[in-house]
Amino acid sequence: MTINATAKPARSLLSPGDHALVLIDHQSQMAFNTKSIDITNLRANTGILAETAKGFGVPTIISTISRESFAGPLFEEVSRAFPEAAIIDRTTSNAWEDEQFVARINAVGKPRLVICGLWTSVCCNGPVLSALEQGFEVYVVTDACGDCTAEAHERAVQRMIQAGARPITALTYLLELQRDWARTETYDLTTGIARQYGGAFGVGIQYVKSMFAAHQG
Image (tube, rainbow, N blue to C red):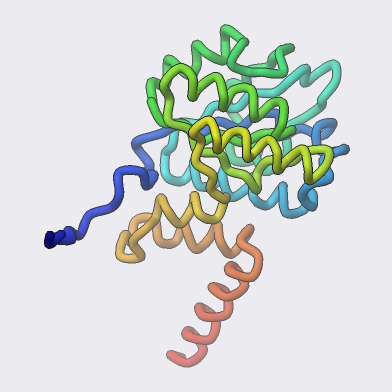
């Protein structure tokens, strides 16, 4: 049997208008005991997500747990991208059990969610499993999550994948939304985020731009 290829993306690839980003509990207290990922990398990856969602116009839901009495302020990478955001503060470790949080999910009205949070096994795992059970498509940004041990993080990721979640990384998210370097309207946005937060990839972009400009001059 002959199969003919067509030049169109897979339905499972993310696009700016088909999902909402959900950032859960990227807070000081939750980061103190996060050991599965270096805190600098965690903050950079969270920054990639926040700036990407802002730049591409992705509806973004931000939730904290006991912000004033326990877990403290959001990462600056999130609050800087969304300074005016209406943040949902909760007492429940599973955000999906909070009525205000679920109301926001329903108000956004996207059947596809991209979720990450601290800790992976608790505040990320709970809403991911709950959303999947209620029929949502869920992508988990595994390198914008973290846990008290590598074991706890990995077991939580496995559990979510077994339930149907799709794992991605922060840089994958950025590049998947751009997907075509001919999309000039978001080219500078994408390369700018990568240069700021993208580690070696960002340094490479800086190098190419610098050397190309020097050569052209």
